[in-house]
Length: 573
Ligand code: PEP
Ligand code: MG
Image (cartoon, rainbow, N blue to C red; front, side):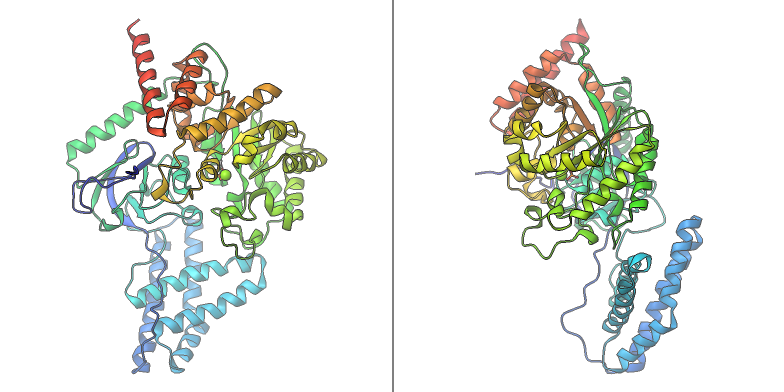
């Protein structure tokens, strides 16, 4: 059996092009800079024969790392410069150097001695908790830098070559990307990751072209020029100048066409479909609020706290939520309570080691162990909502049963949060959508996880991306079943997973009975333009065709052919 997998068009780096899964549209060219993994100490520690030389090497590595941080501080804005200068001071701490020397004199080689010394300080800070406890992770980064220097390995973390670059990585963790600046990172290429991975979600939210599951991409050397096409998934190596110009121009035209329609989403015959934005941290808040949307369809609250070692206080949470509600005054904001666990680990909500975290105590299930965590979040949300002009809805992630849905709705209402719903991202909830929705005011389909659990395919595994394709008829059937429960009960059902951001799939979702689509701000215009070209009856026909298809590829082809035919007929009328 042949399984469709992303493939490289050539033999690897040095060939003309690579191919992966396109996850964020746009075309851009730039030099490659790779995200280096943290260094690993070799398994066997070498015997120290020259203690003085070992001490000198350790001190030189510490000084080099501090010099580098200070040099970067000199060219950074005030906030970043303060952070970098403080980090340089930590590396220059004489007590740290003394501990390194002591360990070397005790027989350790320099990289091991540095590792041990940083470890002692890290444990000390972590034990203090609070703000200082959170700085423990900074020490890990500094330790990795000094160890990498001693082992002759590339510096870990986001590269900083001093010019805009195409970021190449095996995959990106949410924490790697917190400080990613789209002015520096012009495109993202990863070897792993699928269409629903956080790399894909982040790239779309930043409007940075991205290709994931791109085999051989790690073979590309730093500095090699590449042309990334985030719409086709093709990565051209050392492209000719006219090829770059043509690709960038075509991407610009596509953007312009999409921008030609504005206002609330509707089909050609006026059927309303709410178009909403997905937001994570506060970094993308201004851009999201400025986008032409009717509000927020998914506020991923856990993204605010991914780097926190301890639970943020009710006041801290309230202030963060209030900023979002203020930015969206007069519009709807659907807040998802903390979805901790699996691909979104929160240090303060971590469970004991689980063999399969994606199937473990995550999302709403976290409140089985930590009921007060949800309680405090609801208190903070209610306080922020009380003084706000936004229409605040709350929903729980990873709901599996009607009882769980009911329990969450009851808790939300007790706190005065009057509109409460559940995410449908577990097949059981979709199959039993009718009894689930009886306990809710609305449902929102998280198609990223729904695909993962329907196909038993890890959403982070690029290798299984074909199974995670949102066009899979089995997934569409579960979406249709959920939407039908909404239609019968007169309650709204939306999609807030990445499926909503596909302009070809959006009319199919509307045809299945979905009332709102929530996506990264950059996807709004293409989706709005796609809906405006078709009537509701045409959307129904597309939904029937997609459901009747035997696989994802033929569903997509059938729908694309029908849309082409209708829109070209309309343009010649
Ligand atoms: C989803 O699973 O589709 C979803 C919207 O939530 P997340 O991607 O944050 O898990
Ligand atoms: Mg999810």
